[in-house]
Length: 176
Image (cartoon, rainbow, N blue to C red):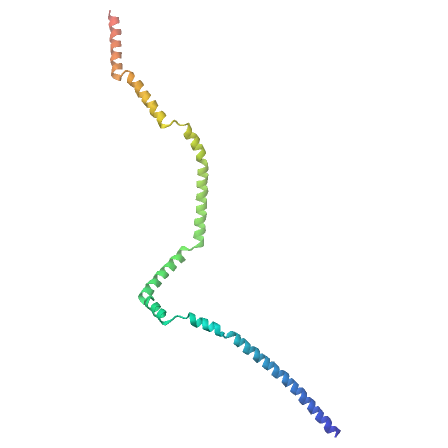
């Protein structure tokens, strides 16, 4: 009986070990299944989210209004052509090398203008020079004075006559 008892004990032990292994495997499988179920539950929307979404959904009236205001196919095609042309224009216009060259040329031109501006008189110098100039009233007064002085002088005709008289007097004195 010893042999049979040993055999039974061995079988019981093997069954117990196998049972434990099976229990551990089942627990692991159940744990994985539970985790998967919880992950799936986490992916699902909760009732408050669903209620909120249902409350904010478009109603029939606003949907019909939007459908009436939608762009028709010919308008859509014309807008698409315009967008395509603009896209082509942008592709042709945006060339970084040309932009860099333009930017460089602009910088050179600005530097040249700056050099020329440094050579030109500044505001302070110009004001100093303008302050030294005579004002309009002084110039007008001087012109009036010159005109009055010229009015007091002999005219050209009078000078010519005077010269002729002098020549005649000189000739007459020589003759006498």
